[in-house]
Image (cartoon, rainbow, N blue to C red):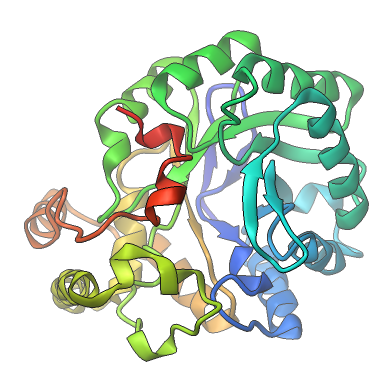
Length: 331
């Protein structure tokens, strides 16, 4: 397994990380035993970076990972946890809470659910507009000093916020959506993190399956997050699937899959970028791991750019109310 370092002062992790969100019902029902088997297969393949959020399944995802890590040497997994998104008993979403006292409370519950004595990377899931980022990062820094957290990360933050956060404590990485059809970070955010020595953990590299070559509209159930995503609706979905088909044709010429081509493209954008793949099954994981063996030449990258040019995606990546919460999308 190839390795990449998250930022100039962060941990060294596998060149591909496993995003575990989909194992807790965000994309429809998931099989618990298959999910655990997938985590084990990832670890056996040398994948060290496991990403979760305390709000995925209202704690379900953390408990799942905790179960999977029982008996596994602690240094075999780099566990990244997001916090701050508020849920209600019906599974609905509310606001964000990144107050210092809330940070420490969320952390205590995550440690208990995961069965760990420390979390490797801890990060607010979004900017809380009611709390200065300096206060949130300062609270996590307290937990670093206390030994409960190893590194501090950010998620979906804009360039100005990133600079303010990094002035308080070193930031190892920014987790943010980055794929062939979500390239907004290239304008201001990517240059900023590179200037500051901060890595990128890129989620949504397959655009929630949209450009994987496997997506079928009929597979989206009412409880599936994608049922509310603009990119999966009507004419938007048709336009985006056409982009996926164009990518698939290029992949076929390389004896690869569209998913492998999409993951490899993200990985090729810099050694400071670690793609997170949201595999829920071992076969999906195996396909994604194959991307690490796919070498893209300058000619390949140019052909991909022609097939899926920047800005070609139809529809926003989140519904309007959720887009409003993204500091990374503010201009």
